[in-house]
Image 1 (tube, rainbow, N blue to C red):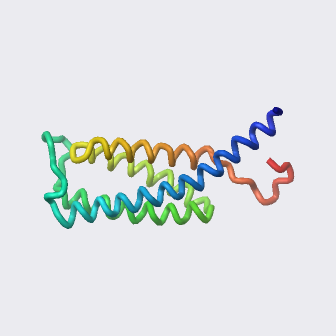
Image 2 (cartoon, rainbow, N blue to C red):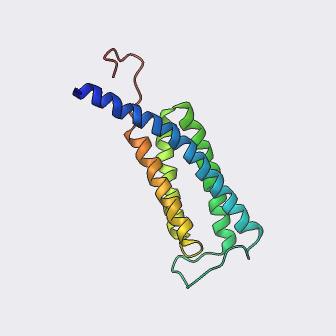
Length: 140
């Protein structure tokens, strides 16, 4: 296999993964939105463990997750359409989601770690994908 063929195969994998990342980002946004709604609607849904230095009221955390979820859903829709700002926003909001879920660790540690891992996969897929330019005659 020659180097251009290998590069083409990697870009095909990254392009497919970026579509998967857009879908995954949409799911993460919806989950964050629902997580926030459940924290705002009923404070007894989440159980807090030990005291945590980044402790906020659950209603505050709920609103943070609602706003972040809506922004992530918008970024996922932009990523599906292939806009450049959608790629940048997806990376930025997935990074914010990592931070929010890190701070959410005392409420649901395993769930937070799972969402952090999924956010890292989204960032990887978006960063490694190099869309083909319209005027590119090389065909790579």
